Length: 92
View (cartoon, rainbow, N blue to C red):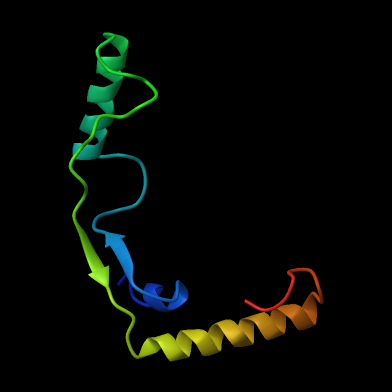
């Protein structure tokens, strides 16, 4: 799935939102429309969105793949530094 390996890539426990990433649809689009209407009617502040209930999410714990992810990052950094010495200030 979309979230597989992300805990390795980011080196630890992560909160991953459920659902699609992209333009607002469904409830999120409705919230944005309600905020825009409230701003246009002068009842809401354009600089501060209303407090909406957060999206559903799941917490992913790092697993056995964490060591593999570290090895991949180390090899990537070594290869990158060999091709572009000093350009990135060291390894990943």
